[in-house]
Image (cartoon, rainbow, N blue to C red):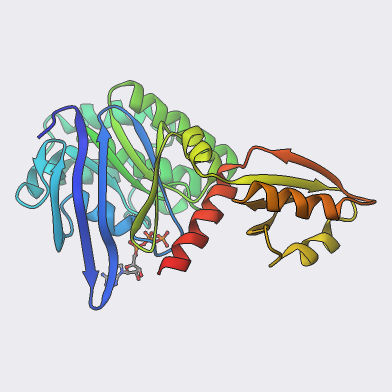
Length: 306
Ligand SMILES: Nc1ncnc2c1ncn2[C@@H]1O[C@H](COP(=O)(O)OP(=O)(O)OP(=O)(O)O)[C@@H](O)[C@H]1O
């Protein structure tokens, strides 16, 4: 057991019938960091999170969460982890405060009134405490969910797509709260599909088809991808996209806004292809691949292997 590691698991595997949802995943995450958990839909993120917090039993694999054995100590883990599920639910006809008091009772929190007061204050919910949860907008609901999962003073948060479907300002506010909590010593593992959120994390774990594809800080994931990217802009880009798809050297052709990103792992082939396509109406530039370019690439590799 390594005390400095919040998560230390090896070979984590979960099968549902014939389908292997999580396939021998290793994660070693230090305490006090914020890590992003990324991967396409159905890649096994929720299943992994549920095994880590003791809600789901792994078929294979071993390890610890907050120093506790994930197989034997699930009760202790649950006490110290705040888990925000993808579709968090509240009592719509209770107020924000009543919802939090209810959660406080579930956790048998002493001096619940004071704890609720403090949590309302830190999450900026005090002035809305008497509002019915059912009348809150997405961003405020998500803030209430964060309040509910931090109420029992956990050492770690496992957040499953906490910002799905909320507006950019609410996402930004939410991430300010995440960093505030991390600066107070909390460890946070957060699953997301948003690249800007991934870039706010200390490290990223990327899985596809249940397999861990890459892990590390954003810049080193990009550096180690072996990917080269050219970006095309200008009025001729639309016609270009159809011409380039499937051509030797262009492994991925994808729009990012109005620009076209053309990526491949063979630098010479890609360059030759681009040189042949230089023409009117298109400006080409060789650029460092974005995290999204790299993930599209990794997803393609995972598809090939599966
Ligand atoms: N209880 C279950 N019974 C059967 N299959 C399940 C169960 N839970 C998850 N799965 C399957 O396991 C796979 C992984 O699902 P999981 O929800 O962990 O993926 P995810 O990465 O969280 O996806 P998303 O990004 O869409 O939330 C999927 O194919 C899913 O259908």
